[in-house]
Image (cartoon, rainbow over all chains, first blue to last red; front, side, top):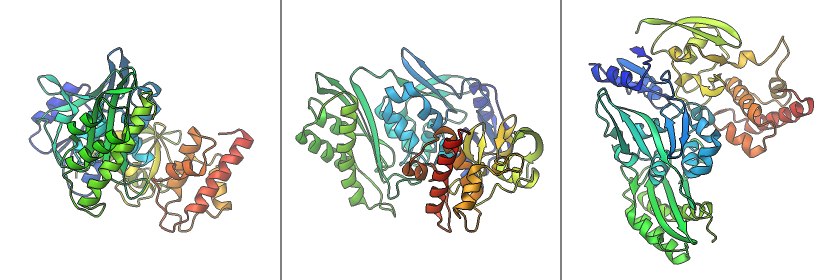
Length: 286
Length: 162
């Protein structure tokens, strides 16, 4: 196995592209190095992006935030501006693993590991996050929901990598939230995850995005669930419609963490709770 | 087997060089090449925390860091906790509260607990339990470990040292 530390994302893309053997990108390594240890992957080349300038920075501007691909979960949690603007995204990222994992794990890593249960992914999608994808020849920006296409599969071509995740500026009177259910409180994988981002106008929900995780092969945007609460003040009727739409959108697996029936039911319950948190964060009163 | 790479790093304040293959974990490099066997291998997959170290001030599992990633970085292990032969208050309180049985998980707990107290000198029990959730003790001495961390936080606040 060879180990390279390129000085730019473009150089990293070139190394990944021209490698004839198995090439892997290393950021936090919390998935890759576990797979290496377990013999699931046998890399010929590992490209460590952490020496690339600005790749470990969170930049904020009038347009929003640009989060470098090597920024760890712990760093997201310590960024006051990001936490204030997108609390749901930060709480989702911070739910991943232990403090030790938080010291290394990254958003693009969570996204490109492409687990259906990835905690940060529904929150990023609900927030309208985009991935800045760099290839050997060109750079493109894609909505996060277009990156994962199935369990363990992404839409990135050979030689492409995510250089940063961008989040838009949070609108006034908006709020987001992420909740997940796990059998244990820590160090576990979501049975259901739900992210809701919404914006209020005169106390009424004007816009909403509802995204479910762990209940389908990828995170899913549930347009019917958003429609259920838009135009409401999150009264009980709207909440019931939201829960029903979320449950109806589930296409989960049966496993040791939860049965299909259980996941479908919990998706509705968590949706109500997450909507209330997002609504209150947006300044709404219940 | 890959070709070895020379890695220059700082470990517990001392400049240290070691040569390791690219696919070797930092945990293995620290144990077998630097001789710091306080870094323990439990699971080897980032679940148990026995190999916890501080890497540039961040708590990490050294089993899921490559040795070559440590180039130019600063590492602290359990061996760096005591100063001039005097145990760190956490170490003393682990002894006083019998917060260890077989001892394999202890170095990881000490390093993780120090990381917690460095950022939060007055954690409540629930904060301690969350902060130590990445450290497993299969003798299940968790209550005594939590008591030892609480006692240390109290001692250190009283003495005003960090």
